[in-house]
Image (tube, rainbow, N blue to C red; front, side):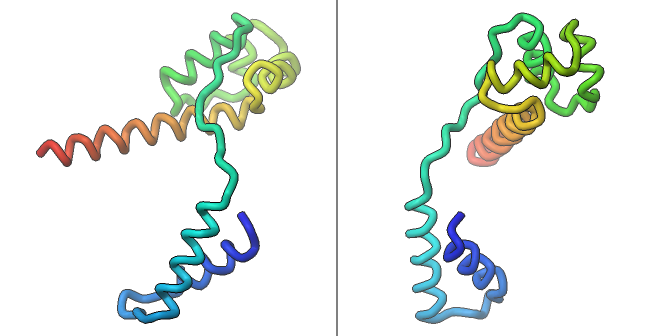
Amino acid sequence: MSSLLRECVARAATWSDSDQGLARTHLTEVIRDEIGSLPREQFGLPMPTDPRLLRVARALADDPADKRRLDDWAILAGSPVRTLTRRFPIETGFSFTEWRQRVRLMRALEMLARDRLHSECS
C-alpha cells in the first residue's frame, strides 16, 4: 500500500455519515485510483506435492479452525518440525503459517459467498 493510499484511508475513516461534499468525492476517487494501481495478487491455495506435507495441507483444508501447534502437525506429517517449516515454502511458496492463514481466508470467503447467495435467493 502506498503512503498516499494509507493517508487517504486514514482520512476517510474519520468521516461521519453527514460528511458530504466535493472533498470527500475527490478523496474517494483518489482511493479508487490508488487501489486500481496496486499490483494484482495471485489468490489461490497451492497444495504441496510431498505426501507428508500434503497430509497436513488436506487436514487443514478440511478443518481450517484446527488449532494444533506446529509440533503436532509435524507428528501428523511424520517429519521433524524443521523439515515441515523448510519444505512448506519450497512446495507452496508460503511459510506454514502463511499457508494456514490463506486456507482460513479462503474458507471465510467461501462462507461469505454462500451466505450472500443464500440471502439473494431468499
